[in-house]
Each structure stands twice: as C-alpha cells, then as structure tokens.
Image (tube, rainbow, N blue to C red; front, top):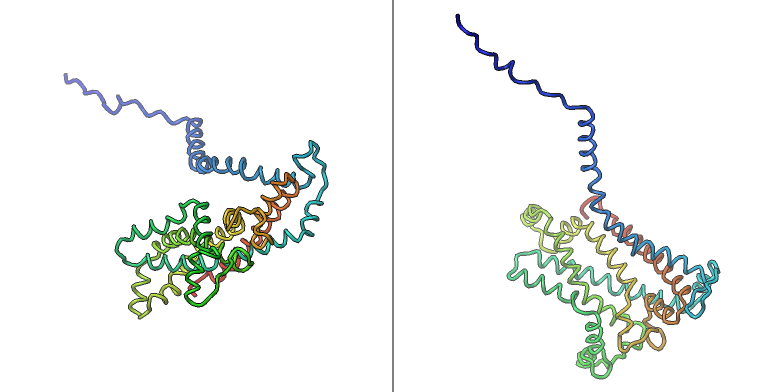
Length: 323
C-alpha cells in the first residue's frame, strides 16, 4: 500500500499578523523622522540665535528704559526719556545722515560693479579660478590693514590719490576734513573690501541660468550687454534682493573704517563729519552711559529694518518677468 507524501504547504506555519500596536509605533516613528527631523537639524541655529541674538536685543531694550551707568550701582527706570533725549540730539541726526550717505555712496556703485565683474567671469576665460580667488582676497584682508593703507593713499600731503590729481592740475584735497570727501574715501574702502565678495555671490547665481537662453539670444543678435540686461539680471533677481539687503545692513553698521580713518577718533573727525551710528554708540559706551547707548542701538536697529524693507520692496518690483 502506497504511503501518501506529506503536504508541504500544510507544513509551513502561517505568517503572524502584525500587531496593531507595533504598526502604530512604526507609523509614529516614520512621522517623527519625516516631519520632526528637519526641526532637529535647524534647532542648533535657533538656540544660538536666541542666546546671542534675541536675548541681547531684548536685554538692550530693557537697559534703554533705564538710567544705566557703571558710575552708579542704581539703575533708575525712566521709560522713554532716553529716546526723547536722543531724538533731540543733533549729534544723533548728524551720525544718521553720515551713515546713510556712506551707505548710498558705497552700496549702489558696489552692486553695479559686482554684477559687471560677475558677468565677465561668467564667460569663457582662461585662469577663471585665479580671478575668482583674487576677487575674494580683499574680503579676507584685515580691515585694520585696509583702513591704514587707504588712509595713506588719501593723505593730504603725500597721498597717492592727491598725487594723481595733481597731474590734472587739482590741488591737494584734505580727504578727512570735509563731509563729502571723507564719505567718498570711506565708501571707497568699503567698496574695495566687498565688491569681489558680492561678485562671487552673483556669479554663483549666474551659473544656474540655463545656457539655452544665452544661445537663443546670441542667435537673435543680442550682444553681451543686452543679454545681461534682458536675461541675467531678471533671472538672478532673488539673489540681487538678498545682496542688496545684506549690503544695506553692513553699510548701516560700519564702524572700523570711520574709527581708524586718518587717525583714531571716536567722534569721526574734529567736526564729526564722518561719525556713523555705530561710532556714536561706541562713543557713548566709552562714557559708560549704557542706557543712552542702548537707546541708540535700538534706533539703529529700527533704521536697519526700515531701510532693508524699503530696499526689498524696491528691488522686488518687476520680479514676475523679464524687464
């Protein structure tokens, strides 16, 4: 009598169903990884920003509401008196004017020159890496060394700038004594340091512009300037907005250049002709008047927000298409 072969299918044990609790745990872990991990990655920045950004800002606001000086152990609450005194201070408005003047003279030509340099480097050139590194060198140079060298260049008696002007019949200019001349000299220092850095930012944005657009424009007979105006600038407009805002913030905070221009002076010259807001804050901190200096700091912060917002609205116009 033949023996029946065992049923192999019957020998395989059935799969155990996944428990609902385990499935829930896996789902929660997946959701936590997908939705929670991005916040964990950016959390260190916000922690550092809260400790070294938001807290000092809030604490400065608190100090500005007090008569706070290291010459006394008592800090008397005086409300907005520091701000009322500040708004009636001619030195404050003089520093505000100097800051805006230097900011305009340095930022506008700097951005135009940076876009032009980036446009040149975006074309096929030999030794492109060398030129790009060269553009970055002024930015990594010590700001003290830059101001000392440019102070010699703008010297009244033996400066090279005045020597070149004398070749055209122009008498020696006392660059650090006049308002416009000192602003032009300080703006030149800022432009020399930051033009190459901004040019590299613009170059990185230009690298992402599709080459097909330039090829089509070349076939249509558009020259390099037309391509820059009709293709490049509209395509990199978000980058332009970013650079304008960061350059504006940097120009509003300029300190070392006016402090060391010509000679060390916390008043920005004998007549305060180039004292900026940052230098005005530093002057009051040296007087140990922390309450008044904190009020100046907050006014400068409000000015930066206002000017950056105006620049953002101005540069954002026409973002929808090519101009």
